[in-house]
Image (cartoon, rainbow, N blue to C red; front, side, top):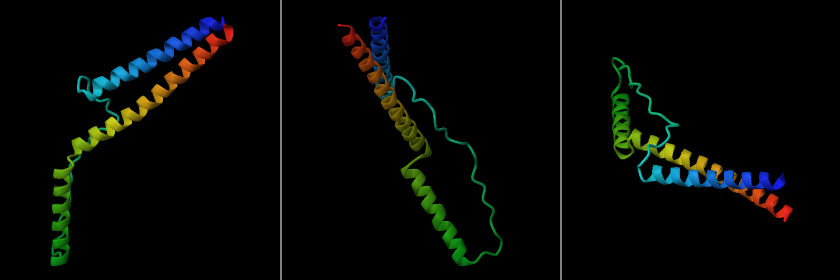
Length: 115
């Protein structure tokens, strides 16, 4: 009975490892889209203009707007969302890989006990 259970755990562990490697390969070679954990919201930035503001506050608002535009040019929101999705998949793949490895090791130990 332990031998059968050992083989089952070994096969499941190896299949998990193969699936994680294959899926990661497909994602990072753009054959498969990245799993979307983070999504870009489509809200619009609505700001109310105050009447009769001082020159300092107007200048500060213009500078903030320019900085915001430059930041969006350097790092578009789509790029950051894709980067976060790739990072989250990588972390999840590492967890799955380690879990598959542990299952395979337990299966091998069960097979060695019976010999």
